[in-house]
Length: 212
Image 1 (cartoon, rainbow, N blue to C red):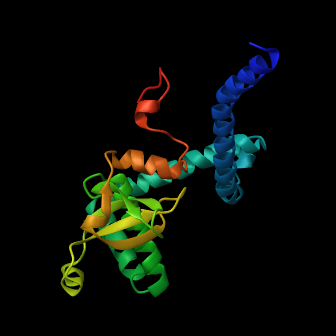
Image 2: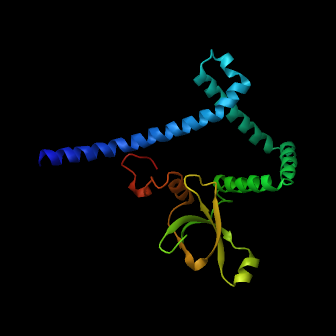
């Protein structure tokens, strides 16, 4: 083996080792910057720095714990009849605002589909879109409404095509059953593929020692 070949092989091997670490650092840094941007208003409003000796990082950590506690408390309250009546009144008020209700209930339906497997997507499919020979990952949500199937005289399914890397937004298609290519992967794996913009490989391709 020549010196040039050995150097090239060593470079490729090092690149394989460094790339996952670099991508991980980039993602963590991106998420951290986003979170601190969201937490800074909480820190300034609650004046947490006054209780942490003006240490910003500790104040942000306390703000994150405060937000997590508030979300948990709201979820706990929503499980009781009093909370259900309160949130029910709130949602009835949201329904009166045209633009707000479309965004709110659209995001809520997607969130429920992601968190509740029984109320979520039925299967992961490929749809030839937007042109022939180009495929996108989609999730079958249900059969198309009967009125639509009667109007088209076709067996149609509603398919949600999420955006990447933000799967909470996307578009809804009504697709013929014959044009759906069902994939032999779970919904969670399909969502991970979208969130990571295709950086994750097949589940069988995970390195040795990685816990599935």
